[in-house]
Amino acid sequence: MSPRLALGAFVAALVLVPLVPGLPVFWITLLGNIGLAALVAMGLVLLTGVGGMTSFGQAAFCGFGAYATAVLSTHYGWSPWLALPVSLLVSGSAAVVLGLVTVRLSGHFLPLSTMAWGLSLYYLFGKIEMLGRHDGISAIPPLSLAGFELTDPRAIHYVIWGTVIAAAILTLHLLDSRIGRAIRALRRGQLAAESFGINVARIKLIVFVYAALLAGLSGWLYAHVQRTVTPTPFGISAGIEYLFMAVLGGAGQIWGAIVGAGLVTLLKEALQRLVPALFGNSVQIEGVVFGIALVALLQFAREGLWPHLARILPAPVRLAPKAAEALARRAFGGDRNRPLLVLDAARKQFAGLVAVNDVSFKVGRGEIVALIGPNGAGKSTTFNLITGVTKLTAGTVRFDEAPISGTSPQVIARHGIARTFQHVKLNPDMTVLENVALGAHLRGRAGLMAAMLRLDRRDEARLLAEAACQIERIGLAEHMMKPAGSLALGQQRMVEIARALAMDPELLLLDEPAAGLRHFEKAALADLLARLRAEGMSILLVEHDMGFVMGLTDHIVVLDFGTKIAEGPPDAIKTHPAVLEAYLGGAA
Ligand code: ADP
Ligand code: MG
Image 1 (tube, rainbow, N blue to C red):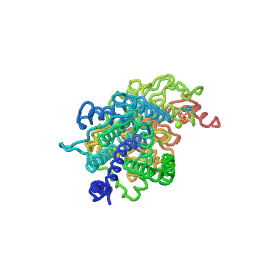
Image 2: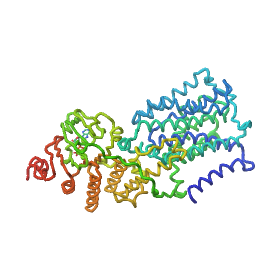
Image 3: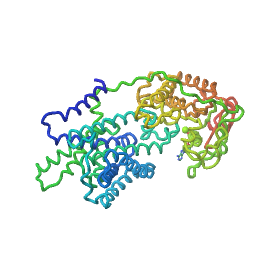
Image 4: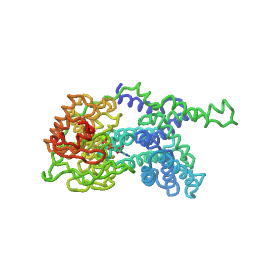
């Protein structure tokens, strides 16, 4: 059975359920509630499971959607359909405002702030006169289609589940795209994403608003299904339940949202019946049992339930990308006599430690320059100063005459500077191909809408073909469709080089690229770098293998304890007394 067939079978089952003769309406209503919750949980899967931003306040966005349509359709007589865009606008705008403040927070401050707004919005809904205070708003009109009122739970079932399936498919499309890769890089590898020109803050906000829109949509549907809204379903405890659904279902899996919503909704329903039957009506301990059951489930399925289910389902077949029209290449224009990169008295102090001590050097166009020195000499810190990861204490960095010091990694990447990291920063769960395609982010155009509607396929095919081409170039074609985390460390370093090349950089910064490579792999890498230089690319590399450095480079800069102690062509450096002193401690 193919994944498509599995989805087809699921949809067919949903279509058939209301047609089962004698099925109590109660079950259809319950299934509808699962669908409504699944919409919210799906947003949370994207926000928390994929994006790594934990939100306890998601129910509040349902509230915005529900109250907006409730007010418009009761007080002002709007049709629910006309109110839908307003509901989404209200939830979306609230998310922009809250998101601008919260997504910048890190660690536990983000979940704490979502709790804060979850609590305060609940009280706000209950205080506003127009929203009916704690009594809420009732007599909300039902949805209608072609003059036909959708009051029958069977008809509502189709509307809800049609929406859920459509939302799931659109969201899956989104994740499998240029923007989707950026979203998936949020949880593990923000720094790498920024270093390839991705505006991480903007991507976070996009995810935040997307999740809120799904919640708002659920709220809108809820209002016209329940026909009455009160503050309770939009409070903090509902927010916690939604989070449980997203996590229990399988934190990073879109279909897991449906599994989680089903599980939590059914568990609550079962406990509401079972507990009073066992303990009598007087003891209200459903909540306690519910909490214990959820914790037990989490113990049993750390990764959520979807991965367990997915084991029975067929694994999706991942095909290597087809050839596509090549992306435009950068022209290495510039005046050959002017250096490409200039460090002028670059300085970095960490408290009392001077990691980079007023270091100046240049990288010429089409040159390979090596930065060498003992461990802790300040080489990686110098890379971080050039790429904007670390702010300079003093001095300047200019690229192609333009000062780039003081700007962000994302802006510096746009100049055409690509890098690898000494400590590999790939997303281990994404395929090698996807990791490398992330490097080509700036060379694509397709945005969120295009991705959801699959209008991005041409753009996407070109990005993937470029990524595939770079992977072939570094000799890892047969590993293209494997998760990056499954490769040996030396291979992962090579994947980082492919990712940097996918950006089509003018300057390539490589931090210990040959570490962990075998002899023949080093030779292949040296060949590749020499070819890139011949094509006009400039390369700055940090490397400990002196054979590798001496045979390849045009110019060498030597650091020791943050200070430049020598620079010159390889032959001069080999015999330079200060260099021998630093490396061999004077023993030579
Ligand atoms: P290299 O790459 O040459 O081995 P680094 O640039 O990584 O050296 O480190 C240079 C010095 O700066 C080391 O003493 C290191 O401990 C220190 N250092 C690097 N990063 C930081 C940081 N973020 N905070 C404090 N000290 C740091
Ligand atoms: Mg280093």
